[in-house]
Picture 1: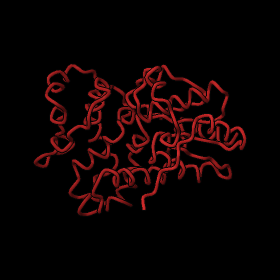
Picture 2: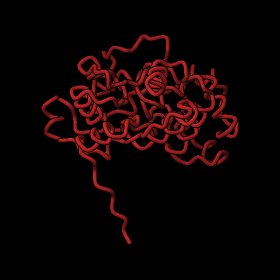
Picture 3: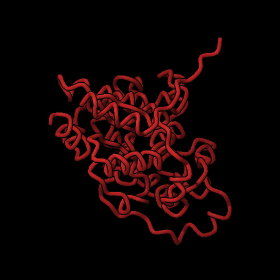
Length: 274
């Protein structure tokens, strides 16, 4: 028997529920963000219950996305929810991925919080977090967290530069850069993109930030770890795919606790407590 998905809530229905119950509501982009923030809120929110809703559970008009110059994806839908909540004075919070920074300046509402780095996964590019992931999930098969941060920095910088110039870039062919046993230190970004990008990418501006989390785009961290250490992660740690590696990183991130001092989580803590 096939289980049917529950009907999506309209924004009016969501806002009415918020107004009637006074329960805190947090709207996020996807299921992994939902589960991560629910886990973080269990400890951080103490006795303050917060409902966390992935935007796919809400009905957002695709035409309205287009009218605001937004692509029809989870990020754009979160921005529309935040805009309507702001205009109607509804006290919810929406969390959107900063990605490469597009739309950030154009969308500033009291109901909207941007991740401090491109995505939730970006926070895991942190030496202590990587050490914890290595100890608890990677079966101590990877180098130290500090060494990983150092060796991931240049590949992440290159990939971010390409993504900044190509917002709709298809998934890079990570495997091509590691074919034959390549390492992170030898990563050649020209191998992972189509020929038309290879021909011009040398002219793209590279981010110069000292903090590599600022250009650690979403899934690139996990994909690069799988590319460089896939054999060890699969055969020695039982982590066979990107989802498993990223789940390990998110779990270590929660355990490390350092995100409590990051602006996004400080703002969420204050909002939950008021």
